[in-house]
Image (tube, rainbow, N blue to C red):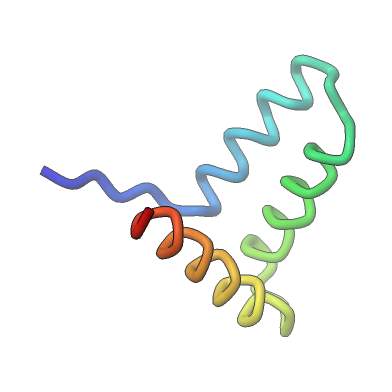
Length: 62
């Protein structure tokens, strides 16, 4: 059985945990930017989506 989680939901959840734990460093900034790109679906969302798809595929193939 496979469970699919939206990347917007995943990035949002991670961002909420980082904000609540007050650990706002470079990692939190990256999560916030990625969440913004996915949420807003700007013109840069296409390349960001392709990059994250490539990373997920690379991790899956390890």
